[in-house]
Image (cartoon, rainbow, N blue to C red):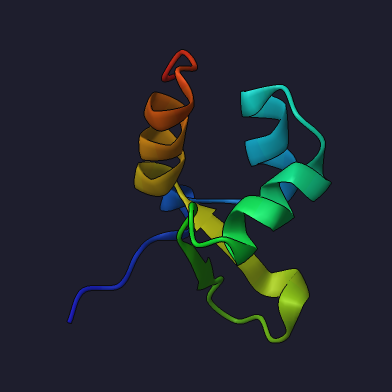
Length: 68
C-alpha cells in the first residue's frame, strides 16, 4: 500500500484560496463527498484532515474553474 506524501495534501484554507471561495464552502464540499480528504501523517482529529491534490483538480474541473 502506498502512502500519500504531505506534498500531495492541502489544507482546507489552501484549497479555498485556490478555488477563490471561503473555507466553509470547502467543508460543505467535503461533507457532500465532492472532495476526498485524508488524515495528514502524524495528526489526529479534524484539524489533521487534508484534501488530496487530485481531488482538488477534479473538483475544479467539475465546477468549471481553472485547474491549477
